[in-house]
Length: 65
Image (cartoon, rainbow, N blue to C red):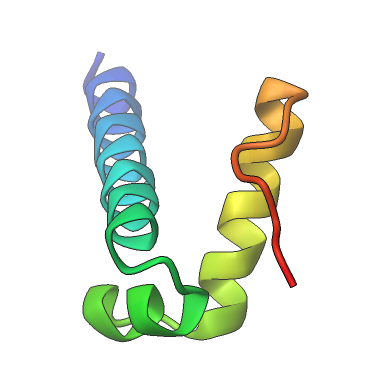
């Protein structure tokens, strides 16, 4: 029972980190600025967004430039 609760807590925490990173990227429009604001590396933010796209099997953003 205890390990199940710990896993559920970890899932919620992970989901909240993903949501925060996603929202910060949308607000800043930049992987680098989002990374600075959520105290992660630019590559970690970029990889996380790519993982979101793979999970949803759909692009999240229209990439320009």
